[in-house]
Image (cartoon, rainbow, N blue to C red; front, side, top):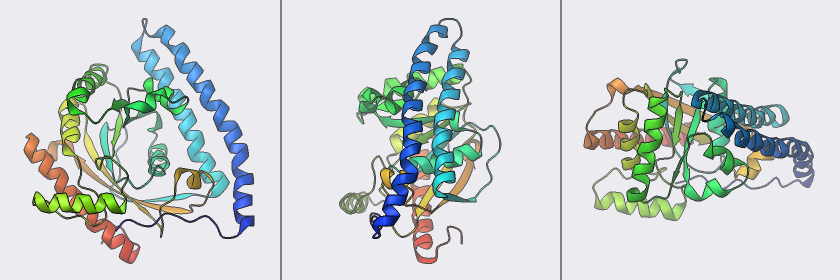
Length: 299
């Protein structure tokens, strides 16, 4: 079963001190985000002259702001992201698939990308409506992120167009996808388990059944460009924080296990690739079961 939501500190003094540490950071990060948006909008001027320069400007804007978020979490609150599993080679283009429990999964992934020097290369699958949100949403419009409506007939052409641009421009990427499609909740888990039983799929205890169609399209679209798939298993301690609780420093430790699979080792057929994803999620489910029982991601 999913972990319960994290409860706020019982002692008011602890909550007050967290707020005192966090407010100055927000005062810095908020205007910095809007300044970043301004630089991104001005970068359109160079687009007709050099798409490479346009992307470089936006990559550095994203890396600077996301890096600020990561380092403030470390410095202000002592957040520790413990990474286990496979080592990640330098400079790989990859597709990252991660379990999704909370919006706080995003700063966890930012932390891992930061220590590998890939913050500016992150491209996210995100809901289409987010592109209208000032700050984060506007910024992602300039980063080749994939805004989707969850309607495959509408999303397919858009996704293929983005991937053609990435491949033709030889753009360095970490493309992040939460294959479950939504954050896990008890009711959603129950519905997913019932669906799995009707389709003779693995009945997962800590994950929703992954949506494989987008993943297959991603691997086909990045054929010859992506080097590997990184499977991130994110494990919180005792309870799952919200994004605001993460920002306030209520989280001290998060565990992330990474399994790297070279693209050359993946099956090439669509059905076989979808079956491979299911196998990875069954293994991920076992990994989480072990983690919740023993505190260890690896056997």
